[in-house]
Length: 340
Image (cartoon, rainbow, N blue to C red; front, side):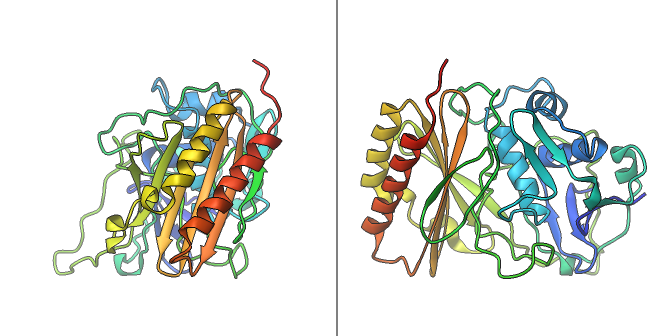
């Protein structure tokens, strides 16, 4: 039985989504695929954060941002990354729910149905989107995220644009403003991975991962994969910096965020320390645009989001830094007090 979610067919043999019309392939991390299977198996049911963490990560110790990051990655992969998420919805103070209206071809256990899906797709048509969560780092160890409780679940919204806008949310979203319909085919997101955020794939999920061999007479073309590079900046101990790079080009050699916004980052770090908050910054740079998504967390694990994008940014580092600092300052001042 084939499982299709919003025109994306599940391929468990390689933890991927395949577009039913274009053949485009978007690869997911092991835990992202496991999370999607869990959602499909309980579609239209509200699943709590605690339940999802225990089902997907089992007994593994991960950071409090792992679930929001993984959910954001799924939304991007399923073209559900508009202002109003329609496929995976956030239910304030309760958890998340997958809208069954977007699921087709499923009449029982999602994992069993996914196993029977073996329709081949030409590799030449694929455009891979690697989405791996923060705990799937190159060393295979959990990323050292700030320890925060995971009880609060705020409302999910996002407003991309050239001016940074703080919004209460529990999922990161760094992307270009779409010019097509939400259901249309989207180009690979300028960023996020987010979130999500993403590193090296871990062990196979429930033994489903068996990558198919390429035909001996055909050489598979090099494919574009979005990856996350964790940047170290000891002077800002309350900020985690993730650089979203395209593996097919030399983006990984571009200057670090510290090079562009070092003074602003240090001021933001002081501001975060004053308000007892932390932040994770995802950024993606191309010659024509500099995009950032900032997640600000308080001690009650309530996350607010800032999205900023500047075109023709070269030579405007100071302006970008001032805008980011102003947005973060406004956000931490607007965040409700955390009573713990």
